Every structure is written in C-alpha cells, then in structure tokens.
Length: 260
Image 1 (tube, rainbow, N blue to C red):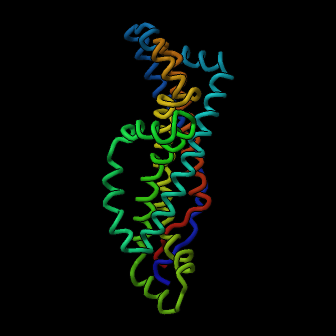
Image 2: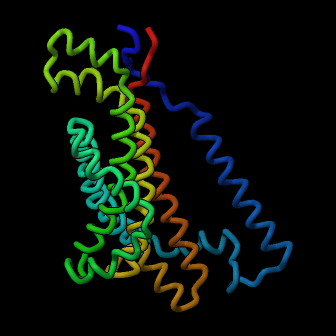
Image 3: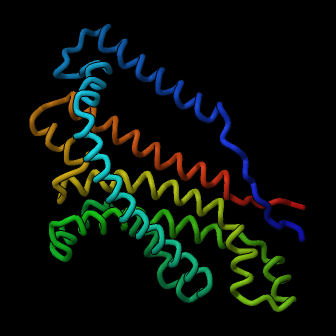
C-alpha cells in the first residue's frame, strides 16, 4: 500500500546527549565570565558555583519540592493530554463537531491562561486541585490541535481503499489514522509537557504551598537571588527530563509515514 507507515525506532545517539550538554556548559561558562568580567555583585547575579552550592547545600529541600511540582505536572498534564487526545479523535470522526468547536479551540488557545486562574479559585477552591486543573488546561490545547492536524493528514485515497474493503471504523483508526497522526501527536505531547511545567510554576504562585514555583515566589519576596536561580535551575532540569522521556518514547515507539 502506498504511503503506509513503519516504525522509526531510531536510537538515542551519543551526539543527542553530548551536544545539549555542550550547549549547557557553554552557557554556564558565559554566565561565569560575565559575572567575573563585569564584577557583578552576588546579590544581583551570583556565579554558577554559588547557585550550585545552594542546591547541594539543601538537597532535601529541592528534591522534596521538585517531587511536588513533578506530581502536579504528571497528574494535570496527563488529564489535559488525555482530554485533548479524546477530543481530537472525536472531531476527526464527527465533522459537525469539528465545525462547532474547532474555531473556539484555536481562539481560546491564544488567551492568556493566567486570566482563568481567578475563575478556578472561585469554582475549584484554593487547594492543589486548582493547580491540577490549571495545568490540565495548559496541556490540553497543544495536544488537541496537533493530534487533530495529524488525523487530518491521512491521504484520501487510503481512506477510500479501506472503505473499499469494508474496514470498520476501529480498524481504520488503529491501522491508518493513528499511525499517521503519531508524529503530530508527539509534537503536541512535547508542547504539552513543557507548557505543563510552566503552568505548574504559575499555579504554585497562586494556590500551592509547595513546589519549585513556590520556592521561586518566596525567594523573590525575600530578594534571595541565589535561591531563586537554584530553584529555576532545578525546574529546568525537571523540564528537560520530562521532555527527554517524550523524545526517547518517540524514538522507541514512534511511527513515520513511508512511501513504499
């Protein structure tokens, strides 16, 4: 069958790991050189070793709050991704539903999500549930739009071919539409994961009493720049770890279209 799909399964190479680490080392070196060359005082911009000392001096604090943030990201992100996937499948199968909701999905996506926070405080309260709902909303939109675009990418002649052999809707979805959508699905998943981390920070500024975002808020209120940068560094590491998991899963499980 022309345009069928195959498993990509390309392994993670040493360059995939070494190049990002090299970029991180270069950025850290530039930061160090900037502080030294301009003689910037530590209360404005501490050097990298001072930030590392804060992290290494309080491993329990950062581990505990990183786990709290990761838990919110995992729960809220999973809910948002699952809801986005289900809605994308629904609008791909029901043209009338697509016409009814797709313009609103595109429009609502560009609205600043922070504007929704006061409503969530009213309807959900001031607990962790509000943070989870907020993160879920952040993760929802990239997933639904990317997956819907992928499901629309199936060539019409292949849909016609499956209809000609009386393939049922489930078989058509699993054997044709879903494999074609997988690259876009993973693209949406990467956006959802990274945005969910940002959403967790914003949510922890508003409602939470734990998490890396909460540490950043406390550090800013007390003008502890080294603590703030340390929390941000751990937050970046958390985001990179989650993004890396998605990349590894895509390479091991992903499917790409082929012309044979």
